[in-house]
Image (tube, rainbow, N blue to C red; front, side, top):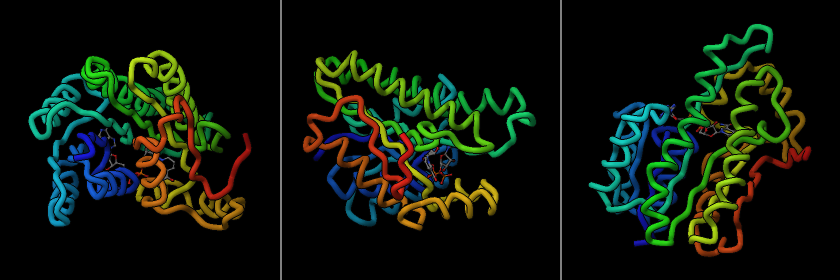
Length: 244
Ligand code: NAD
């Protein structure tokens, strides 16, 4: 077994592709999602392909749910050796129309969720001097997204958290990295207007959105021993839209 992976928001899109890829690579996978039925469907898919998986519902922004998710992972496969903080939401709004509640929810799911899940799994990783954490940020956290100030800010915070935590724990055997995907064909991107997507597509050197499986490859690499020298980095599967 490659290790015990916990993937949040894995009932759909990028998280689903990550869970399937990690299972194919030999990880026993805990599939979390807000939706139990979606998490169970992905776990069933993994098992059909001969992999190991357990499903657990829960909101990563909720402390009690995070305890439940962590406990389910340990009960299913033992201590988590790879955490992929992927759960996320999208919501498009002009800044002047943005409600405080929209801003708070965006930070709760992405930033607080990443913080809480990391806090849950990190002690065992440090105790065993082994582990990897891969955070799913976004290219919009690097370049900014129009009508997505709250989303872009939350994703930038995840990149900062990745760098800072990596500095703190890499010498103790835990590597922390992130991916910052460009637009990817998932249900989340359909939350954005057709006009937004068309303008974005037109600016992509590759001329196309990515597929969830292409992001999963980057996550699997960062998690693997092949990425032993990657610490606090943010890989960008982003169709060539690099404005850094
Ligand atoms: P998606 O909507 O297909 O999947 C997201 C999943 O996360 C859903 O199944 C949802 O139920 C779950 N989820 C949402 N809030 C949750 C919570 N609080 N706790 C647990 N699960 C929760 O979206 P996706 O495109 O696959 O997005 C996955 C990640 O990738 C997100 O963090 C997103 O911000 C990031 N991302 C997506 C794109 C893109 O273009 N699709 C680009 C860059 C980054």
